Length: 98
Image (tube, rainbow, N blue to C red):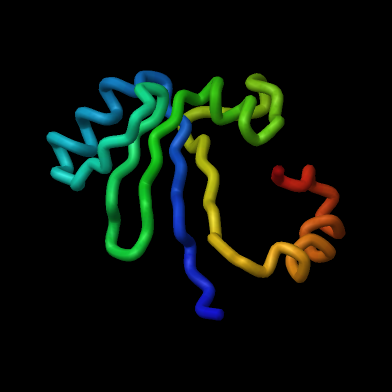
């Protein structure tokens, strides 16, 4: 299996302004998704997601006070090997993702 980051999600204060910056300013191709609460952009072999900071904190089960800005982000590696990865994840004393 080739290791690579599949998704970078940034926690943003103003989703509308951040979306406009990446779409209009940086001219990244936006993937139109059915939800107004998140924005996705295609990168070369990966995706960029923009998500409200408070929703990101809730999604990753971290109190909002501990999610400092700027710099709120998550990285994802898509893998079919969940059973093989869970023992490694558990040793890190981190909550196991659903």
